[in-house]
Amino acid sequence: MIDTVQEKFSCRDCEAITQPPAPFHATPRGYIGPQLLATILFDKFGQHQPLNRQSQRFKCEGIDLSVSTLADQVGAGAFAVRPIFELIEAYVLSADSLHGDDTKIPILAKGKADTGRIWTYVRDDRPFGGRDPPAALFYA
Image (tube, rainbow, N blue to C red):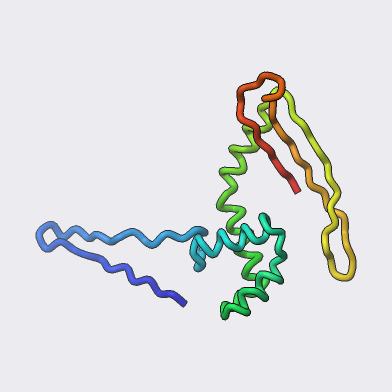
């Protein structure tokens, strides 16, 4: 548990009270730092490493992070980047032409593999003389 002490200062002349701002947290009421949150998110989405394997790896390094704690942090991280996702979504969907794809992927479930889907929308008119930068949007 980390206790942050925020001292209050008062001016004897004008009796004004000042207090320094609270330390930055990547997620509201979060206790992990932005570097650890970025590592968790990158390992999950960039390296496709399940949270149970991440939990085991952290345990080997002496850090006790349960799968449910990691899942909470992934949700908080996804919520934190939601405004960026909405900007990308608006940009991609405002294109004159879209390229779409519906891909089936196996998802591990207890004792079996379910079928999941990823919908991808891409805007890229550069081969056709367009000057706007390309972008991709993913829904799962």
